[in-house]
Length: 274
Image (cartoon, rainbow, N blue to C red):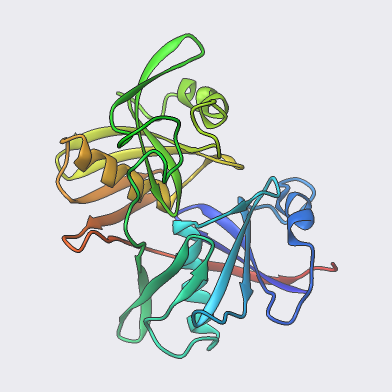
């Protein structure tokens, strides 16, 4: 079966056209995503037919869990389905478990230079995310490995917890990622984002993804960091989020929708016996 290897700023995926395939993708994900014995990736992206939108995207994490949404993944997905003629317009609807997302292909002289995605409205209430507690989950306290942390959690497609630190690249934070992800206060687990505020329009981000661990980039994490930073009064509504291999631009617009703009790369195409 043919596959394509794709990535958004280093957050990499194996993409399959599953519109005419019946596969146990959840069982296949750990095998295919293994870096030493498989193709290697943070997860699978599956193209499926949709009765609600132009096309449907499934995201299976490397551990076999299914994610509601993925910001880097949907940019790669959108570029691929546009280039392959699966969709014919530069703006289209993608059905996900988090609802219908609307990517916009960014063209310059006929060349795709990036993808802007309307990620929808963020959910802020504890019951919506979900987080144990009431009201909005802003600047709360959590104890992990004997250390007190202040956190804000929002839902932008998937739940993301934002923790402000001086140096997000310090590996001690990633060593806490699994324990934070599985903390009892997060009944559906959470993605974990360690963020440093450079100024009122620039953030530095490193992410420990739910079901994946440390990743080079996380689009929904960048969106959530932008939302959380405005809620905490440390940035405006428009920010650049610096991750390991580049920058994502995030706008939390006046219509309450979050817009993410960034690159997507199709690295190679191959064939694997499944």
